[in-house]
Length: 59
Image 1: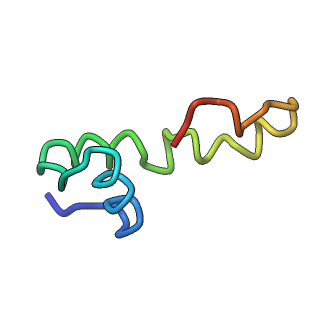
Image 2 (image 1 turned 60 degrees about the vertical axis):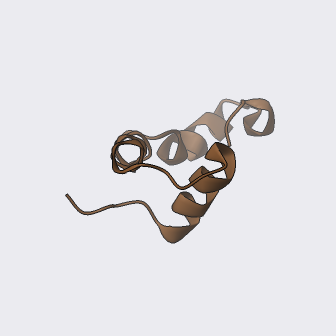
C-alpha cells in the first residue's frame, strides 16, 4: 500500500513522534488525515459557525 501522506505531513508526524513513523502509523494517519474524512476538509464549514480553529487542539 503506497503512502498517501505528503512530505510535509510525514515531517510533521516525525517531529511530533520524535522519530520516523512506522509503516502502520503512516497508514493509520493517512486514513485519518484523508481529505474525505478529515478535519481539514471541514474547516471552511466550521468557520461559518464561528468556530475558533486556532484553539481546537489540532496540530
